[in-house]
Picture 1 (cartoon, rainbow over the protein chains, first blue to last red):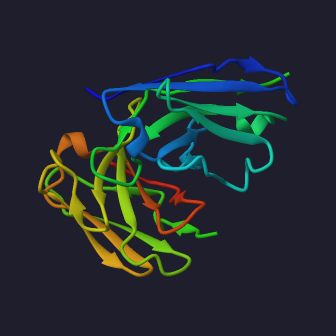
Picture 2 (cartoon, rainbow over the protein chains, first blue to last red; picture 1 turned 180 degrees about the vertical axis):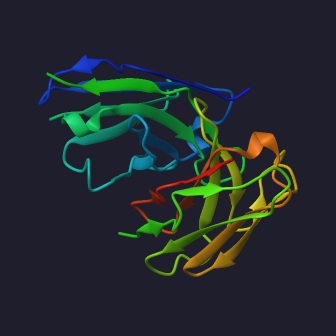
Amino acid sequence: EVQLVESGGDLVQPGGSLRLSCVTSGFTFNDNVMTWVRQAPGKGLEWISAIKSKTDTAYYADSVKGRFTMSKDKSKGTVYLQMNSLRVEDTARYYCVKGLSSTGASWGQGTLVTVSS
Amino acid sequence: DIQMTQSLSTLSASIGDRVTITCRASQNISHWLAWYQQEPGKVPKLLIYKASILEIGVPSRFSGSGSGTDFTLTINSLQPEDFATYYCHQYENYPKSFGQGTKVEI
């Protein structure tokens, strides 16, 4: 069974940093593109970052480029999202997703990030 | 960057109705489009990928069509469990993107 478990969400002040983790199991980690999608309270889905399966190449939405860094540890089957210079508008539930655009897409339950003073 | 536009943010319908949700891309994305359903308080669920391929386990009353810039999600004979928000998602190129969502309500 595919499992994705996010953690690391918290309440943080504007300008602060957080690192989110997504521990995966039940599938071949190295064969899948992993993605972070966020959803602000009462709002729609926003694609923010993805990392390719065969390389460590990561891609970002303009809204987070230069502030967020996505990485992965193949030995642990884990992806990370380092978030720096956090803004109030980064407040959202952050979802880790396996294979966002293909059959068998799987989502974690998400982790909540709140940016507030 | 490619922008995705869903023309309706809310759509009112009744049980048994045929519902059509549209999505437009700001440039040609061929057939690289998926549709997601999100029920309140739940994680999004993939319905359709490559514009028209039904994900395993999704009821056949759901169908997708279109290519290039204009796409449609159709729900035949709307069921109570179909009242949800639907998002289109383009994956032609990075950065990928979602439409803003269409909420189907009674």
